[in-house]
Image (cartoon, rainbow, N blue to C red):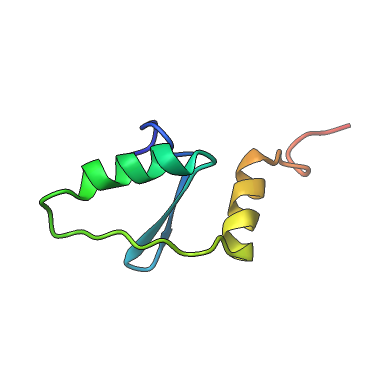
Length: 68
């Protein structure tokens, strides 16, 4: 699903996926397409602090990997 319209980030949390995006309309459309006719379902939830942390860490660089 990564790279599809409206999808900015996918993170696994146990047996669920947290799929986030900044364009709510595009994200909802993509999720409706992906889940149509299948056994999977979508549920809208508020963004958590954990979601924000994962988003920020993906953009971070390794402070310890580079030398002076």
